[in-house]
Length: 202
Image (cartoon, rainbow, N blue to C red):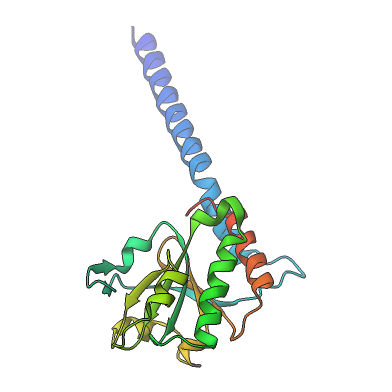
């Protein structure tokens, strides 16, 4: 009788251990794409690989601040989570270099083809002046957010004029990359294409 009881207990323990192993394997299978994409981008840097954008290391989680849209409607920055985001700062007048940046952001997104819906664009407007109707129409689909005196600006690298750059946020809301002034759209497209290819988030 004792022998049978011990056998049953041993069988039960084996079944429990087997179940836990299967559960662990299932978790690893589900988590593998996310882990692999971050390892590929942040940790594994094959010889000869060069990112065009400047990586911001470590990535900076941005606070979920509330900004206003052009019509005065509140907009939480956290609403952009789940997407890759090209973001820039500039004044409402948006002439010359500013207009070129917004155009480039639109074109780089379009160049991603069927993956373009994974990429959002955001313009943080740094003064209280009115936007021209033509500008609003030309860049329809871009999040235009009023950021006058917003503390959010302090989260971005201050080594250079923020308005000179286009920044990249990952789908978790982290600031991860900065593109140079007068960036090359083809090189940006290559960077983003690689990210979208290897990432299973966003």
